[in-house]
Image (cartoon, helix red, strand yellow):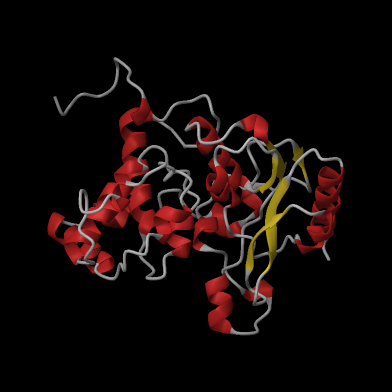
Length: 300
């Protein structure tokens, strides 16, 4: 057992025994050695389920939406991406910060569970990082009530230090309109409309999704055209609000490069409105969520 795991269990036990929180959200070991899945602990005797290892990739903040209007105090372990998701939810008034006890854990990047499955019983050290971790710009939690472990330096993570935040966007921009259309048509033709990307996204937090409203916005049949409409609507819905946690792409069963589209939009927003990353705090509104007289108006 590593030190962080032991500290997690000790702290969770203390918080539950002293009734400072009613629920602790963390990770537990899944069915396979390369799976670490969310766990919800409300009893002291269950704290030994909590673990911290190279496969705790799931963003726990999304699960706050399952009971978004609860007044119970919830303890939540947060990596850098999880903490940005918490800020997103607080800013969207989906959860109250005072109802959360945030336990920060610096994250050096999670190992790819998909690669582990494909390689079989290879050692963890030989596994690549999750794609979402390669593009990560905040490996340390941005908001927390207590921090476990030592902060990590971005430059110490070679795979991350060598990659641009907007890596891969340039190749999309270099395409002709026809090539770009064919590129996305090819990818979204594989979409099975399972909505996993929507369900895991902390920025997709509407109490009622437009895609669940019968045929008002989108036909039920899974068609290439409908898939493109779905992908475009969702991408613009989270424009300026996407925290770039990459969970949408990680959980996609059809390996659609969803984050390449999200990063393209994020790059366009930076070029139009200046440097901006969503979820860094709860005070700065998204560029598309407020109006400034100096905003560009080339479209007028």
